[in-house]
Length: 114
Image (cartoon, rainbow, N blue to C red):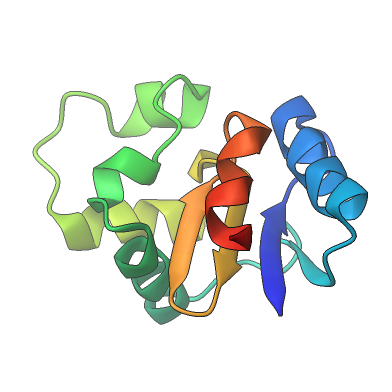
């Protein structure tokens, strides 16, 4: 089953969800602002994505600029920042088995469907 970490207020996230729906793919929607992933979940997702924690951060968010930008942060610090402020997590994240993509643009999701 495919899982999408989704923020309904985000246009790109809505496009990702629409992509899955139009493809007729069964999926589970996780509204991650309401169901915040734990540290361990987030680390697993980052591993599936094959990126560093910093690459999953929305660096244009005011929370990031005001509290974290320019500071020397470890990967653990960055993961903790995303758990404490889930708005910082890039979206949408689509997971299938042990692989994941950030669905920006939405057609990147097709990588997981083949």
